[in-house]
Length: 125
Image 1 (tube, rainbow, N blue to C red):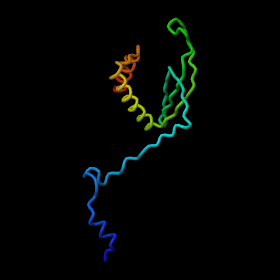
Image 2: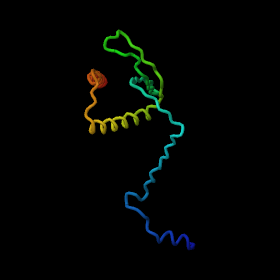
Image 3: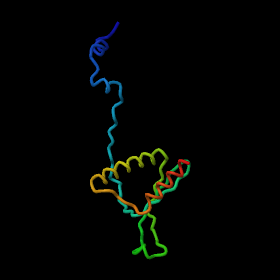
């Protein structure tokens, strides 16, 4: 014997489109920036192991790097990510830079595109 509440639930049609029915609701992210700090970097490097990807951020302290035989970079931040978070960052940064270049034009990096292409071709072999 069904109770009145059970009968009411059976009589009500599910709300939403067929795609929404049974799909989990998207979580709402509340960004807490109360402890956030800002650091400027004009130099970035990365290293990785099987378990993590490490990003190093710093600032070039040399006034004229084209004539200097060496120059100093003050490393200020190190961010360690697991490979999944690093991949999400990679995808996110690609999207952000694509939007930037659409608005302001291509960002050209001397020598880096050739190095990236060589590294990509080396990875395929």
